[in-house]
Image (cartoon, rainbow, N blue to C red; front, top):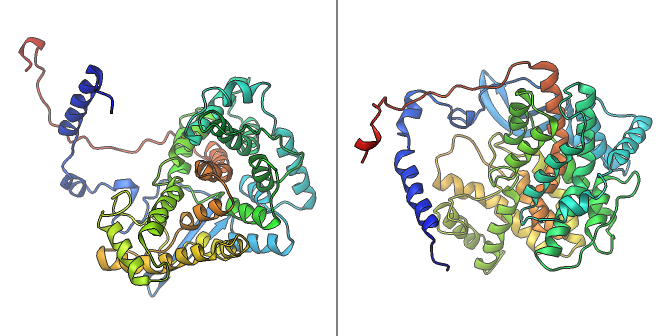
Length: 453
């Protein structure tokens, strides 16, 4: 380990001052009824806005009491499970029509769908030399940082960056929606080549290509994939496209939009929010946790051995010692996360195709046992169940997607919701979002420099 420089040592000393002088008495949060995380003790979010884009249902009222139920997710009033069922029945991809639904409030007919696919394809053009000058130069080890950098750089090529008319914002959003898959994959290819020393592949998109197929084809050296692989990835994109206005990255989009800033800045801010391991980065945490579990648990069928490891996780004795079982539990859902529920059946099919049923069954056992272990060791205000992140990382792994792309693919889907909420915010809310913070600092007198210790 390299010796600390004087600057390094000084930063450590200053960091200690931050720790000593930056703490707030935790009892004050209760005293002033502060809703930490904008949630009450039961985990319900504080109402801060209205939306017509997405609805999450997780309970019902019975005899005047709130009763938890299996979760349901609605896009513009349509149950997402019905959308998926319809797409599967017709053997077609559904992500692009979900984007259309979220943006325009209705499902497209065949002609509208074809026209929209062509519009996205026409928008999928990067500025000349952008790949060479922006993506391939100074590649990052973090694809979300690369994606945010690319989004902000694209603003330099837009002559109407600050035009907040709905027509212009829609144009900008469609441009970013169409480009996100390429920006993500190309950023990974740059990282793979320049940092990992592997061959460089830059495959161009094909006209009218569905997003799921484009990701797999541009990522893989041989550009080949199976129909089931593309179908499952399309399903993942549908399930990640939107999740109400209260999730962290979407709320970030609305907060930043309310300031009157441009589309590129709002979307870059959302990306930076999604990157966090408590949000979109959770699937990578699940994969890390499961990797350690597979090495520590000798018999993957022994439920007692699995439960013992899960207990160690909660007791901060395993993995990252954070005291969490990643992928289990959600801020809103209790009985079940509909996205995980829908996803699970398709995950099993893909695992069977790829010869990964043993690992899939291990995931299923963890999903079954984790709520019981949590209930034994933690005080819970509501039930817990597997969330969509629990299975998405496993799916991406058996699809052969590098872990560096797990969260960017989440962003490829979620930008649909971010765009819809940005437009909704511009249409309906004219005030800047500014929540209240109470100061608890004590007034102190000024001390002259010569008298300071």
